[in-house]
Image (cartoon, rainbow, N blue to C red; front, top):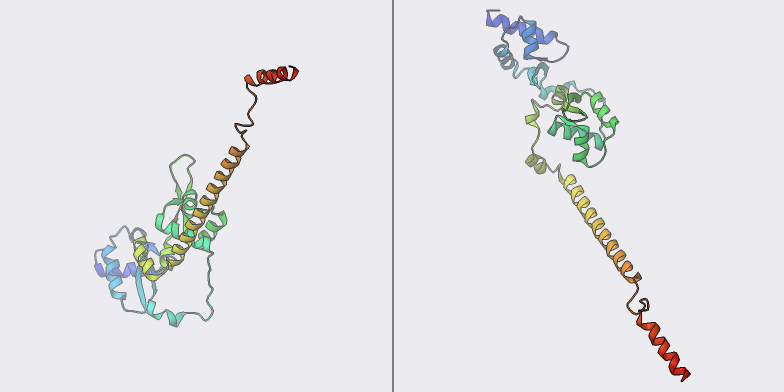
Length: 233
């Protein structure tokens, strides 16, 4: 397509007809390998400020309702998807450390992760299997999906809040409190273990025969003989 306007219209039609968000390469393949970068930029500018916007989420393009109009289209009864604390922790670890294996997730959390937790995240469409790590055992590694970025309104993982932002919002306060409680618990356990070891050492030292109760030496029988002779005399 030599006419830029025709290419813009073709890209627009392609995105409207698509059942799911498309990458730039997929759009280009539909249009005879045309360069659609400029056409996407033009469309995005044209739809800015309208009721429908052209957005890019995880390198995939799609039309979506303008965020400021969401309250008009929101249904009275929303189907809430609640994640357990374990699932939330696993999702956060994958988002910030992907690709990551199950063993690495468990090492970060400090507890075992059930297969059901990962299944829930994959059923939600937020986590996917990203392949296998090329190490002995070739463990499966996990990563987030474009649906994860779209659901949380992120253009890419670079838009995830940083440590300073999380602390400023107070979201890390429960984590900090839990960490302090964990450290106090470990210190108490270490002190108790040390006290038990010292008690065992003292008990072991008390059971050793004292010098007074030591076995008779070779001189003792001779002393007894002398005492007997004195008595007979």
